[in-house]
Length: 238
Image (cartoon, rainbow, N blue to C red; front, side, top):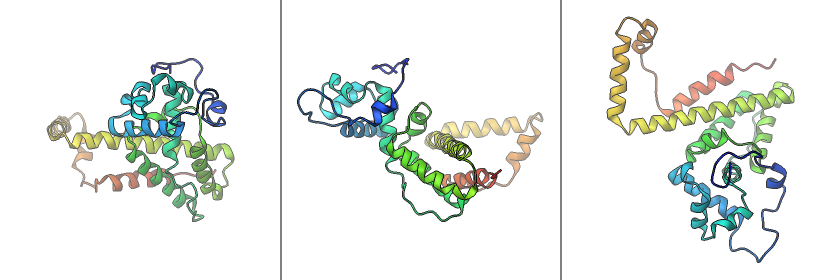
C-alpha cells in the first residue's frame, strides 16, 4: 500500500521493519515511539475497524504531525504489520504443552480465536500480511513445538499451522458477521423464512432434510469447538 493506503509495488521489507530499532535516525528525540503509534492504531481498529486506521487518524491519536509517523511506519501496510505483531504479543507463547499434539494444537486454536475476538479486525489484516514479527514468531515456535510428537517434517508442520490459522480466521470472521446479524432480528427472521420457503419447494431435498434435523447447540464456543475437533481429529501424520 502507499502512504494513503493504496497498493504499493515493493511491499514491506522484513529486515528493515523487524531488525531495526524503530526509532528515527536523525533529529531530536521524539515525544512518542513506534510502540505508542502501534498501540494507538490497534485501539482505533478495535473501536472503529480497520477502515478507520489512517496515518492521519493515528497521528491525531498520539498528538503528532502526520509526516513524522512515516519515520516509524512507511505506509499503512507497514503499520498493519506492526499492529498484527503487537496484538500477537497477547498469545501465550510459553504455555506448557501436554505432549498430546491434538490437545495442544486445539489449545493453540482456542488462543488464536480468543485473540481475534478481542481484535475483530485481525482476520482481515492476516489475509494481507507478508512478514512475521517477533511476537508472531514466538507463537509459531510454540505451535511447531506442539506438533513435534507428530513426526511431520518442517514443511508439513508449517502447512498445518497455516491451515489452522486460516480456519480460525475464517471462523471468527463468520462469527463476527453472525453476531451482527443477531443484532438485526428482522434480517435474521427474513433469512429463516427464505430458507424455509426454499426447503419446501421440492427442488432442494437435501437442504430440507438438513433443516428438519434436530438442532444442535449453537453457542459460538460449542460451534467452534465442534468444527475444530473435526479439523484436528481428522489430521493425519503421514
